[in-house]
Length: 256
Image (cartoon, rainbow, N blue to C red; front, side):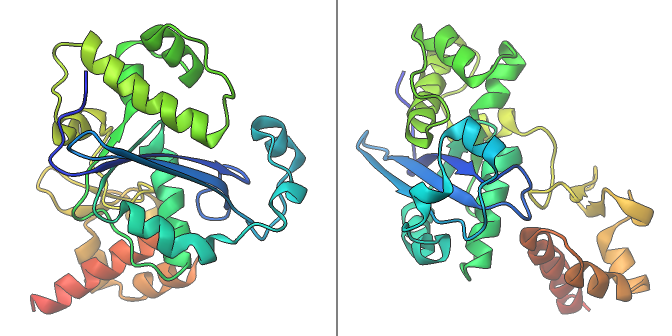
Protein backbone atom coordinates (compact mmCIF):
# COMPACT_ATOMS: atom_id res chain seq x y z
CA UNK A 1 0.00 0.00 0.00
CA UNK A 2 1.41 3.37 -1.00
CA UNK A 3 1.38 6.19 1.54
CA UNK A 4 -1.29 8.87 1.33
CA UNK A 5 0.63 12.10 1.64
CA UNK A 6 -0.35 15.75 1.83
CA UNK A 7 3.30 16.82 1.97
CA UNK A 8 6.64 15.08 1.42
CA UNK A 9 7.96 12.68 4.05
CA UNK A 10 11.65 11.92 4.57
CA UNK A 11 12.65 8.48 5.75
CA UNK A 12 16.16 8.66 7.12
CA UNK A 13 18.76 6.68 9.01
CA UNK A 14 21.97 7.65 10.78
CA UNK A 15 25.14 5.74 11.47
CA UNK A 16 27.03 7.43 14.29
CA UNK A 17 30.05 7.32 16.56
CA UNK A 18 27.88 6.06 19.44
CA UNK A 19 24.51 6.40 21.13
CA UNK A 20 24.96 9.54 23.26
CA UNK A 21 22.64 12.07 21.63
CA UNK A 22 24.44 15.07 23.08
CA UNK A 23 28.02 14.00 22.40
CA UNK A 24 28.16 11.55 19.52
CA UNK A 25 28.33 12.51 15.86
CA UNK A 26 26.98 11.35 12.51
CA UNK A 27 29.29 9.31 10.25
CA UNK A 28 26.68 8.48 7.60
CA UNK A 29 23.23 9.81 6.78
CA UNK A 30 20.83 8.51 4.19
CA UNK A 31 17.54 10.20 3.28
CA UNK A 32 14.73 8.85 1.12
CA UNK A 33 12.27 11.62 0.30
CA UNK A 34 8.82 10.47 -0.85
CA UNK A 35 6.54 13.04 -2.50
CA UNK A 36 2.71 13.04 -2.54
CA UNK A 37 2.74 12.16 -6.25
CA UNK A 38 4.82 9.05 -5.55
CA UNK A 39 8.12 10.43 -6.81
CA UNK A 40 11.20 9.67 -4.72
CA UNK A 41 14.54 11.31 -4.16
CA UNK A 42 17.39 9.75 -2.20
CA UNK A 43 20.78 10.90 -1.01
CA UNK A 44 23.48 9.34 1.16
CA UNK A 45 26.46 11.12 2.63
CA UNK A 46 29.49 9.83 4.49
CA UNK A 47 30.46 12.34 7.16
CA UNK A 48 33.71 13.14 8.93
CA UNK A 49 32.55 13.24 12.57
CA UNK A 50 35.65 15.20 13.70
CA UNK A 51 35.94 12.81 16.66
CA UNK A 52 37.27 9.22 16.68
CA UNK A 53 34.93 6.36 15.81
CA UNK A 54 35.34 3.72 18.56
CA UNK A 55 36.34 0.24 17.32
CA UNK A 56 33.24 -1.31 18.88
CA UNK A 57 31.07 1.07 16.87
CA UNK A 58 32.95 0.36 13.64
CA UNK A 59 32.30 -3.33 14.32
CA UNK A 60 28.55 -2.58 14.07
CA UNK A 61 28.33 -0.41 10.94
CA UNK A 62 31.72 -1.02 9.30
CA UNK A 63 32.66 2.65 8.94
CA UNK A 64 36.25 3.34 9.95
CA UNK A 65 38.07 6.56 10.78
CA UNK A 66 40.09 6.13 7.59
CA UNK A 67 36.95 5.80 5.46
CA UNK A 68 35.59 9.19 6.53
CA UNK A 69 38.88 11.07 6.99
CA UNK A 70 38.48 12.99 3.71
CA UNK A 71 34.69 13.31 3.79
CA UNK A 72 32.93 16.63 4.56
CA UNK A 73 31.98 17.43 8.14
CA UNK A 74 28.34 17.70 9.10
CA UNK A 75 28.74 21.46 9.41
CA UNK A 76 29.66 21.49 5.72
CA UNK A 77 26.67 19.30 4.80
CA UNK A 78 24.08 20.81 7.14
CA UNK A 79 22.53 23.20 4.60
CA UNK A 80 22.08 20.39 2.04
CA UNK A 81 20.50 18.10 4.61
CA UNK A 82 18.18 20.82 5.87
CA UNK A 83 17.11 21.83 2.36
CA UNK A 84 16.05 18.23 1.76
CA UNK A 85 14.01 17.83 4.95
CA UNK A 86 12.72 21.32 5.74
CA UNK A 87 9.36 20.94 3.95
CA UNK A 88 8.81 17.33 5.03
CA UNK A 89 7.52 15.15 7.81
CA UNK A 90 10.08 12.67 9.13
CA UNK A 91 10.10 8.90 9.52
CA UNK A 92 12.58 6.27 10.60
CA UNK A 93 13.23 3.22 12.73
CA UNK A 94 13.67 4.19 16.39
CA UNK A 95 13.83 7.71 15.00
CA UNK A 96 11.81 9.43 17.73
CA UNK A 97 14.21 8.33 20.44
CA UNK A 98 17.52 8.46 18.56
CA UNK A 99 17.81 9.62 14.95
CA UNK A 100 15.69 12.79 15.14
CA UNK A 101 17.19 13.98 18.47
CA UNK A 102 20.74 13.40 17.25
CA UNK A 103 20.06 15.02 13.88
CA UNK A 104 18.57 18.02 15.67
CA UNK A 105 21.71 18.36 17.79
CA UNK A 106 23.93 18.25 14.72
CA UNK A 107 21.83 20.84 12.85
CA UNK A 108 21.69 23.21 15.82
CA UNK A 109 25.42 22.77 16.37
CA UNK A 110 25.92 23.76 12.72
CA UNK A 111 23.82 26.90 13.19
CA UNK A 112 20.64 25.60 11.52
CA UNK A 113 17.54 26.60 13.51
CA UNK A 114 15.80 23.22 13.25
CA UNK A 115 12.55 22.41 15.03
CA UNK A 116 9.51 20.15 14.62
CA UNK A 117 6.80 22.83 14.87
CA UNK A 118 5.41 22.20 11.39
CA UNK A 119 6.35 18.55 11.15
CA UNK A 120 5.16 15.23 12.50
CA UNK A 121 7.22 12.07 12.83
CA UNK A 122 6.42 8.41 12.27
CA UNK A 123 8.52 5.85 14.12
CA UNK A 124 8.17 2.57 12.24
CA UNK A 125 9.81 0.70 15.11
CA UNK A 126 6.97 1.68 17.44
CA UNK A 127 4.37 0.27 15.05
CA UNK A 128 6.40 -2.92 14.86
CA UNK A 129 6.90 -3.16 18.61
CA UNK A 130 3.25 -2.50 19.35
CA UNK A 131 2.25 -5.21 16.91
CA UNK A 132 5.09 -7.75 16.95
CA UNK A 133 8.10 -6.62 19.07
CA UNK A 134 11.12 -7.53 16.91
CA UNK A 135 14.31 -5.98 15.45
CA UNK A 136 14.68 -4.18 12.10
CA UNK A 137 16.04 -7.27 10.34
CA UNK A 138 13.26 -9.39 11.81
CA UNK A 139 10.72 -6.73 10.86
CA UNK A 140 11.92 -6.78 7.26
CA UNK A 141 11.75 -10.57 7.18
CA UNK A 142 8.32 -10.59 8.85
CA UNK A 143 6.64 -7.91 6.76
CA UNK A 144 8.48 -8.12 3.45
CA UNK A 145 9.42 -11.82 3.41
CA UNK A 146 13.06 -11.12 2.60
CA UNK A 147 16.37 -11.08 4.42
CA UNK A 148 17.84 -7.62 5.03
CA UNK A 149 21.18 -7.46 3.23
CA UNK A 150 23.78 -4.92 4.39
CA UNK A 151 22.07 -4.25 7.72
CA UNK A 152 23.61 -1.23 9.48
CA UNK A 153 24.24 0.41 6.13
CA UNK A 154 22.30 3.68 6.33
CA UNK A 155 20.96 3.38 2.78
CA UNK A 156 19.83 -0.23 3.22
CA UNK A 157 18.22 0.47 6.60
CA UNK A 158 16.44 3.57 5.25
CA UNK A 159 14.96 1.74 2.25
CA UNK A 160 13.98 -1.22 4.45
CA UNK A 161 12.17 1.12 6.86
CA UNK A 162 10.16 2.64 4.00
CA UNK A 163 9.24 -0.81 2.65
CA UNK A 164 8.25 -2.03 6.14
CA UNK A 165 5.88 0.89 6.72
CA UNK A 166 4.10 0.22 3.44
CA UNK A 167 3.81 -3.48 4.32
CA UNK A 168 2.50 -2.58 7.80
CA UNK A 169 -0.29 -0.56 6.19
CA UNK A 170 -1.18 -3.57 4.08
CA UNK A 171 -1.18 -5.95 7.05
CA UNK A 172 -2.93 -3.85 9.70
CA UNK A 173 -6.24 -2.61 8.36
CA UNK A 174 -6.84 -0.57 11.52
CA UNK A 175 -3.77 1.57 10.82
CA UNK A 176 -4.81 4.74 9.03
CA UNK A 177 -2.86 5.66 5.92
CA UNK A 178 -2.34 9.18 7.16
CA UNK A 179 0.99 10.54 8.36
CA UNK A 180 -0.48 12.56 11.24
CA UNK A 181 -2.43 9.55 12.49
CA UNK A 182 0.64 7.34 12.17
CA UNK A 183 2.63 9.93 14.07
CA UNK A 184 0.13 9.90 16.92
CA UNK A 185 0.14 6.10 16.95
CA UNK A 186 3.95 5.97 17.16
CA UNK A 187 4.31 8.66 19.81
CA UNK A 188 5.16 7.01 23.12
CA UNK A 189 4.58 10.05 25.29
CA UNK A 190 4.00 13.74 24.81
CA UNK A 191 7.33 15.49 25.20
CA UNK A 192 8.40 19.03 24.38
CA UNK A 193 12.04 18.22 23.67
CA UNK A 194 13.57 15.17 22.01
CA UNK A 195 15.49 14.07 25.09
CA UNK A 196 12.32 13.80 27.18
CA UNK A 197 13.54 16.17 29.87
CA UNK A 198 10.51 18.42 29.36
CA UNK A 199 7.11 16.78 28.91
CA UNK A 200 3.50 17.93 28.78
CA UNK A 201 1.09 17.40 31.65
CA UNK A 202 -2.63 16.61 31.27
CA UNK A 203 -3.35 20.32 30.74
CA UNK A 204 -0.78 20.64 27.96
CA UNK A 205 1.71 22.60 30.07
CA UNK A 206 5.43 21.83 30.05
CA UNK A 207 6.83 20.09 33.14
CA UNK A 208 10.30 18.90 34.06
CA UNK A 209 10.79 15.13 34.07
CA UNK A 210 14.08 15.01 35.99
CA UNK A 211 15.92 16.33 39.01
CA UNK A 212 14.67 18.25 41.99
CA UNK A 213 11.88 19.89 39.99
CA UNK A 214 10.54 16.69 38.45
CA UNK A 215 6.81 17.03 37.78
CA UNK A 216 6.81 20.79 38.31
CA UNK A 217 5.70 23.29 35.69
CA UNK A 218 8.61 24.79 33.78
CA UNK A 219 7.09 28.29 33.71
CA UNK A 220 6.65 28.27 37.50
CA UNK A 221 10.25 27.21 38.13
CA UNK A 222 11.66 29.78 35.71
CA UNK A 223 9.74 32.47 37.56
CA UNK A 224 10.49 31.33 41.12
CA UNK A 225 14.06 30.19 40.49
CA UNK A 226 15.49 32.15 37.52
CA UNK A 227 18.96 30.79 38.18
CA UNK A 228 17.74 27.34 37.14
CA UNK A 229 17.43 28.55 33.53
CA UNK A 230 21.01 29.83 33.53
CA UNK A 231 22.25 26.59 35.06
CA UNK A 232 20.56 24.48 32.38
CA UNK A 233 21.85 26.71 29.58
CA UNK A 234 25.42 26.38 30.85
CA UNK A 235 25.25 22.69 31.76
CA UNK A 236 25.71 19.72 29.42
CA UNK A 237 22.11 19.40 28.23
CA UNK A 238 21.10 18.75 24.60
CA UNK A 239 20.94 21.87 22.46
CA UNK A 240 17.33 21.21 21.50
CA UNK A 241 16.33 20.99 25.17
CA UNK A 242 17.94 24.39 25.72
CA UNK A 243 16.12 25.74 22.65
CA UNK A 244 12.75 24.57 24.02
CA UNK A 245 13.54 26.00 27.45
CA UNK A 246 14.40 29.37 25.89
CA UNK A 247 11.14 29.37 23.93
CA UNK A 248 9.15 28.75 27.12
CA UNK A 249 10.95 31.57 28.89
CA UNK A 250 10.34 34.01 26.01
CA UNK A 251 6.69 32.98 25.84
CA UNK A 252 6.31 33.69 29.55
CA UNK A 253 7.98 37.09 29.21
CA UNK A 254 5.76 38.03 26.27
CA UNK A 255 2.58 37.24 28.21
CA UNK A 256 3.42 39.46 31.16
